[in-house]
Length: 255
Length: 255
Image 1: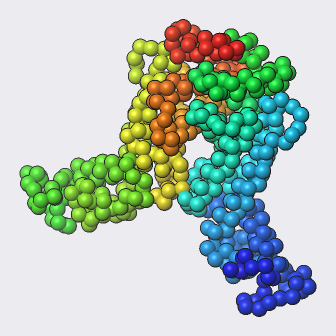
Image 2 (image 1 turned 135 degrees about the vertical axis):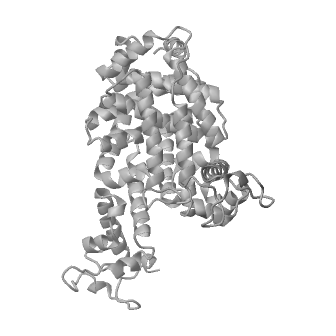
Image 3 (image 1 turned 90 degrees about the horizontal axis):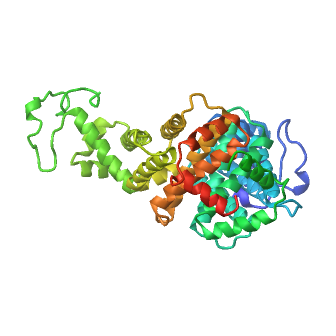
């Protein structure tokens, strides 16, 4: 397939010298090495899907924005818009997954969690239209394959969160807790987009960190593993860290 | 359209005497009044979609289970399986929505919330295959219309929960709290189905009630409206109600 061959694109069946690649052929058209063209088309598609719902992006829009012809886009993505959408989604999913990584920064566990959430909301803000459409569901481009890509991201988020908690083998209740919290993060992202980003991101991330702490606490009262993990976590917190401030405030309101 | 006419089904264009309706015409086929047949087909479809993923249910399966012919099913659902699926989904959605109603039983708010959750999990258990497929997304029968039906159910759940809390006009944070909690309920339902109903329903419902209480508490520390609602709610709780027991247990683990 053209898209996976390491050669350079040219008229069908021809081979093109690498050195000729950067010479413009016509105004809006530049020859690019195959892999580079593929990545360019995905990047252009991703940008369009980020700013408009998938329904409103056509293959012609992608071709035009990429300075390429429609047949050329089809040469790379024979499955048309659907295939291009899935490639863009995979690229976005992989980018999002890298943001889940907790950097070995200083800070308490809740401070680190807050930093990951900020990176996640940056992503949501950058890909607003596409991300919203994807999570709301029912889009014409949604298939078993696109759902599988989204599920992979959720699984990655689950794994990273458990690793962040220092857990190797999570029991059913700890797994349920983390999965549920991830669904809260997603629901908040959709609400945030739907309501014109009314709640400031800082405040939303702080709220989500607090939610994690209390959801873990309410799970810990029924589950030994969660209790142990939470206990270990809280020992690393300080009185002015998110968890510390939350505990003080909860006591203030009688909890 | 046949499906909305108040007449009785018969050969196309014919009129049939109501008194002849219940006389069997051939072994597996009974004439039914139009509305009754329509409801029967939806009920049969609902049962099939409840026990198998939508992909594995064909129009022939529905016809066979209903003791009807394929052309007859098409006469009622010209849009074929997709239309029948949407009708079944609407019927299930309306049934589910009625379960959200808080009965004027005695009991504290958290006891009432637990009762609603039990009714919800009964529904999830009864419609396991279809409900799981629907919430997991990416099914071939999923469209903008099916997502809209699911969203209507979520909105109904939001309204009922706010009404249960005695709230007329919910601000952004209280809305976010309730929406987020509803997503926790959904995520738990999917986990429960995916993991072979490992956690007992009673325990899962109790956990979800606890989650509501603590999520509200962590929202209350940043939002006056939520604080007021929570305060009013907790005054109605007793030491042996779910909220009362949770508070004692949280204190026991140092919260």
